[in-house]
Image (cartoon, rainbow, N blue to C red; front, side):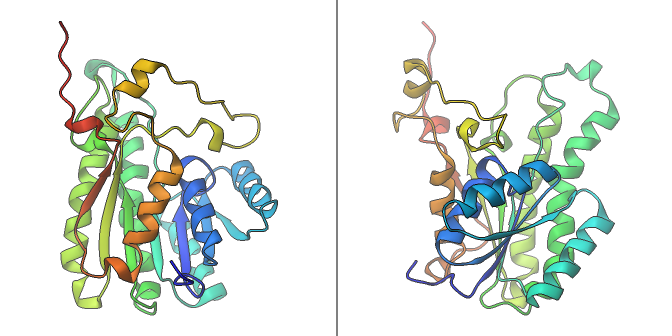
Length: 260
């Protein structure tokens, strides 16, 4: 991005592992001042060490994005350290408890997923707003999922939350336009994150020919695929794009599959 991010302050929730770690690496490589937050302290420390070995630097601030007071404290720390925010990436999310039949899924289990995946982005945007208003060409990017548009059985909370986040994206885009804040989403499909976890939880990717053939692109996705799109959508090159959701799934959701 030709040094576009060299003076930018970028906050990535759920930035310690998986797609979030890939986003942190990509923005740090572009010389952004990257702040990651995560509920997992060990993963946050591991991410900072992993990036340090690449001569990249990020800040880690532990936070449970479903908790209003913790989000307020997070944004206060960003304000104290940087005074502004240019990019907010709402990436934090959980899938569990998953694959429980409707009759067996408790209200608390359903609410737990919604509280992180949907309430969290709302809280982060709400309390980041004063910082974003001080930023330069500020943007919010929500990481949703193709599960917002298609489902596997018994994934009620995750699917509902991601669908809600898609709607929240265009709602915020319209509502925050007066503050000149663009808001977009990326909807990832199957992204292999096994080797983007903290030490002790890394898993070497293993994909069958059938796994790859599900994708017209011929492979499963990687965090780098999401990060490259994020770098574009959060830059001035995407200055006329707001309220949109970009599906990145190797074409999987447009491929019709027949069983003979």
